[in-house]
Length: 384
Image (tube, rainbow, N blue to C red; front, side, top):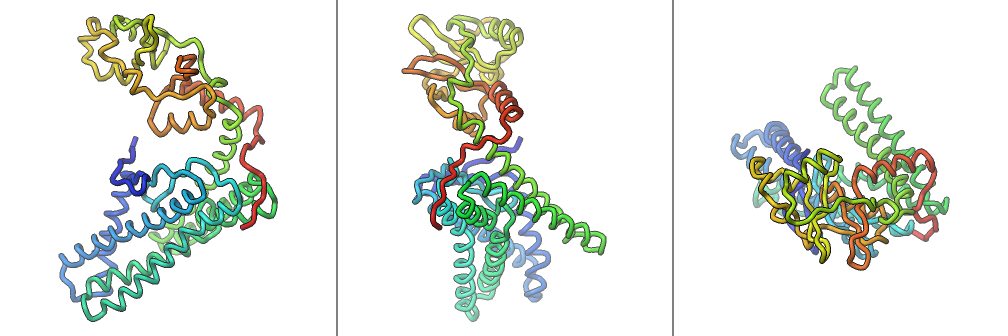
């Protein structure tokens, strides 16, 4: 419903902003301009409060981005690709293409963020001291960034999985138990407990009359609880999909039409008639492209009877495809990243099947029922 949008690219890493980030940016700006800075500097005028507040809020998220870049750069140095970083309502997240292979990798990547925030806090204090007699506004911003980054480092070191502290805990448990799966269960359990504790504290604060603090504790506790459960589910999902290839989950009975077929016939006979969301367009020389529900929706309805599918389809060179030996987990990632409903499967350049979102999710649900304890994550220990 609310898709992130790209704003930059740093060393090959796409930087995205989720619309929820705009909400929290506005909220932080309002909080600083209406409360924090007026309490600390009552002699400023209203315009100054808002300018300084907006500047401080933007710089706060710059430091959050630096925090995430620290995770990403350490991950990349360890051989873990990081295609993108997303800034959202709770700060940011680095999207790694796979789980760390060793406990040492996990520890180094997780610890890089809080360590970077601590460094930023120290540098901000030094900047504030240097600006004391030069610019009061810049000094105020520097002190604010110092306090917030110190809090950010401390908060992320809490053992609430999947916060950085929870990942550090998992790396230690991984080394001791020699099992990534058991370590994730331990860290996830601690994270869930921590989430429940925060929610209970939120209820106590609400009953004690601290409505804002109580709601904030409830919100953060709920987030940590959901994230910890989600991480355990992701481990389960990886365990299922890592054992399957695209050829194992594809359909071989995909529908094919000729380039001259009308859009109306495709809609009536296959999309509505058979529930197909994508139809292959091919001739005697091979596959030319794919016509999907999205392609059809961009064509005026009154032209469907006359419009040939070749003029509407997505050409083959623009269609995202996978090979038959692609791991099913990677297929699901592509479907999610590109908002697809299906991906053609190729073998030696020839289309042999189609993986659809619906059937892939059905396969996952079936596997979860029949093999609830599988895990393909690495279990070998490593020194931290």
